[in-house]
Amino acid sequence: MKRALLIGINYVGTRNELRGCINDINNVAAYLQTTRSYPAGSCIMISDATPRKPTRANILAAFKELLQGVRAGDELWFHYSGHGSLQRDYNGDEESGSDSCICPLDYVQAGLITDDAVRSELVQRVPQGVRLYVVLDMCHSGTGCDLRHKFDDTSYLVDQAAPLPRTYEPAAWALRQTSYEFKRYAKTVGDVFCISGCQDAEFSADAYLNGQAAGALTHSLLQSLGANPGTGYKWKHLLKDVCCRERIGRFNQRTSLTSGKLISLEDPVFVVPAPAPTPSPTPSPTPSSTPSPTPSPTPSPTPSPTPSPTPSPTPSPTPSPTKPQAFVIPLWIQVYLRQLQRMGRPVPQWLTAYIAQLKLWAMNKRDIRDIRYIGNPNQKLTMKMMLSR
Image (cartoon, rainbow, N blue to C red):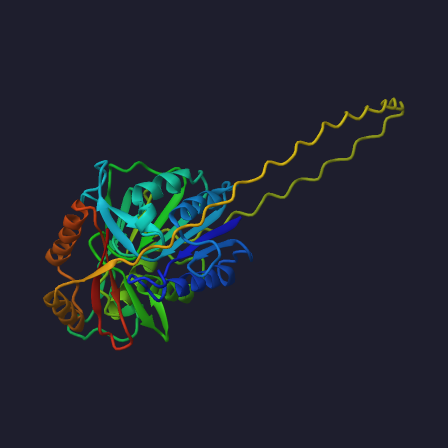
């Protein structure tokens, strides 16, 4: 069985509004159904445009729906495109001191979905033998599932004196990848893999690519998977292809791969399920000369009265999120980021740490802040910090 949960939130009508998240999940659904042979109706779609809104309660309920009835050999896919944020870590399982969080549509009223909740409600419930692929196209998503093993890519151009190319050619890039183990996280029972849009202190881009608004991670991921539909596509190639495509697009984000169990990057991304064993034919019984006695008919049981159905309670309507007040990041940071982008350089660690400290300072005052790049076809970036109380 194959099943997918695809959540895209554009936050329509708010100051946090994005443009490409619904496009992301529509494109992922098309890929899964055409290339990965997901049956029609196997994709659970939740967005601003669907009757089932991406509220906190609906997202957590959808986790249970995704896992319902799964067994060994099944493949699951969870894709989230939307805002991500940071929240103070209260149980001490984060090295950075902050939890990565999903921002549901009603996060102002209902709160965020922390990486601890994603792990407890989804990741730890995946049975043995089931593969779950998670894609988090959001800010601060590096450890969005709290998985034990982490892999990063720092591949570089073979000709380091050459300018950054406009198109991606795998042979032009030398492979360089590293791994890390978070020993504080227990291994998962099932096979869980998470592809994150950026590191915990970084931001994911919502850009305009090939005539359509889309997330930088989702766009690069679908390009890489679409160019390599075979079963021999390895994790090391997927991680390299996605990261190099993001660099060519001048996006200041570093995609990472995390897994619940130790894997080799030489392993294939997708596993071909073993064919079901063909049952051997059962020999027909030898007829006996002695006739068997005819069994007496079994009396039918008296039917019990059918209980009257209990009426289900009418769900209360979810309040619409209030518009948060916008706070613009200082101009010197915006100018500096534009200069880095023109030169094709990553955001320095001190700057990401500085912005993260601003966000943590705001959280001490019970504020919620979220950052996401907003791009345009001319590659001119503006950067806003959203603040909600």
